[in-house]
Length: 147
Image (cartoon, rainbow, N blue to C red; front, side, top):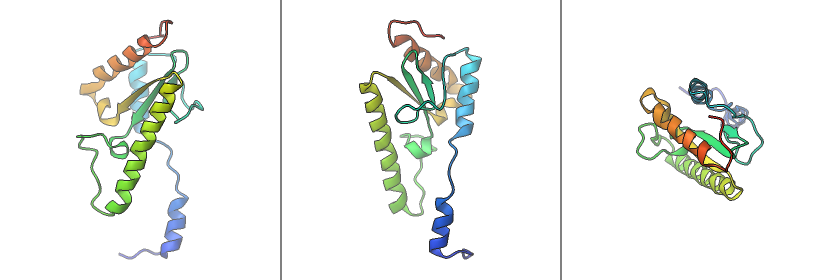
């Protein structure tokens, strides 16, 4: 089936589409944090790299990374589309490089960075996710984390 738009018009239409974040994954983590009484986090904080959750007092930046977009090695969700590999491979590489830059920059600024993979929010792996978050919150600084 052919496209109803010319190539330039299709490009313009697609460029206007703006993503609104991975809400499902973030909502799953919010539910998990609340169920485990982990408090003190904020969202939409103007921190470099735009972490999904920020624990300001403990200086912990928490990212929830999608396995597909951020290339979770060995994960079944981290596949490369067969169409247009010349587009996808550089895009994925830029995402990974940006993630590394954000992590390095925040760590140099004294933040603890925790990255949770989308596939780790399944019921079977949630206990490990909670343990990682609690560990990060307790390690940082001399103050006790609100856990």
